[in-house]
Amino acid sequence: MYSPETITFVNAMLNVPFSFVAIFGNALVLIAILRSPAIYAEPASVILCSLAVSDLLVGLIIQPIYIAKELTGEDLLQEIWNTLGYTVCGVSLSLITAKSVDRLMAIQFHMRYSTLVTQSRVKFTIALIWLINLAATGVYFYDSFLYDILSANLTGLCLIISTFAYISIYRIVRRHHFRIQSQRQAVDFTRRTNLRTRQIIKSALNTFVFQMCMVACYFPMSIILMLYGLSPSYGIWRREWSLSVTLLMINSSINPFLYYWRLRDLRLAIKDVFKMIFGRRD
Figure 1 (cartoon, helix red, strand yellow):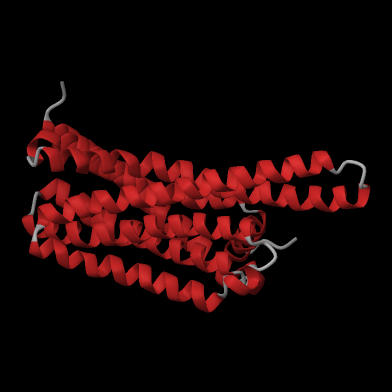
Figure 2 (cartoon, one colour):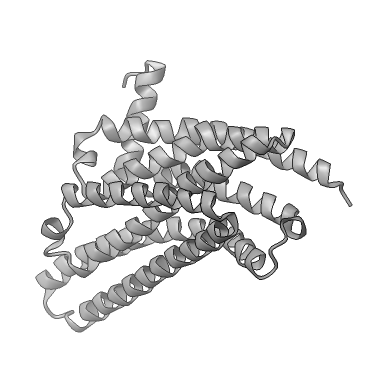
C-alpha cells in the first residue's frame, strides 16, 4: 500500500499537465469563438464561450491553488480552494446542464427556437448561474458541512436535469425516425425530414458526448459528498475525495478536445487560430 503522503503527492502532480492543457485548450476555444462572428452569434455558442471561460479559470487558478494546497497543507489555501474551487467548478457543471436544456429546446421547439432562445436571454441565464454559484459560497462561511451537502444536492440536481433532457431528446429523435418510415411515399417530404432528423441526431449526439463525460467526472465527487453527509468525518474519505476532485477538474481539460472532435464549425475556427499563431498560410 502506498502511504497517504505518496498518494497526495502523485495526485497533486497529476494536476500539473492537465492545468496547462485546460489553459491552452480553452484559450484556443475562446479565441476561435470570438474571432468568428457567425459562431458567436448563435445563443448556444454564448453558453459554450462562458463554459470555456470557467474551464480556463479552473486551469489558470483553481488547479494551481489545489496543487499548492495539497503539497503544503496550508489551511489558508484549503479555505481559498474550498470557496473558489466549488464556485468555478459549479459554474462549469451548471453551464453544461444549461447546454443540455438548450439542445432539448432546439429540438422540441425547432420552429420557435430562435424566438424563445435569444442572446439576451442566454446572457441573463449565464449571469444568473455565476451569481447563484458565487452567492452559494457564503453558505460555506456559515456552515461548511451544510455547504458540502448543498453542493452534493446541486450536483445531483444538475445530473438529473441533464439526464431528463437527454431522455427527452432520445424520445423525440425516435419519433422523428418513425415519422420518416411512415412517410416513405412522399419523396420530397422524406428528403427534407431526413436532413432535419440527421441534424437533430448529430446535435443530440454531440451534447450527449459532453453529458457522458460530465457524469464520469462529476458523479464520483457527488457520491463522496453524500457519503460524507452520512458519516461526516473527512479522514475516512480523504484519499477518495482527493482523487474525485482531480477527476472533476480534469473535465476542464477534456472539454476542448470534445469541442474540436464534435463541433465542425468550431474545429475549422480553431484550425484558423493555429494558422494565425504559427504563421501558416494555405
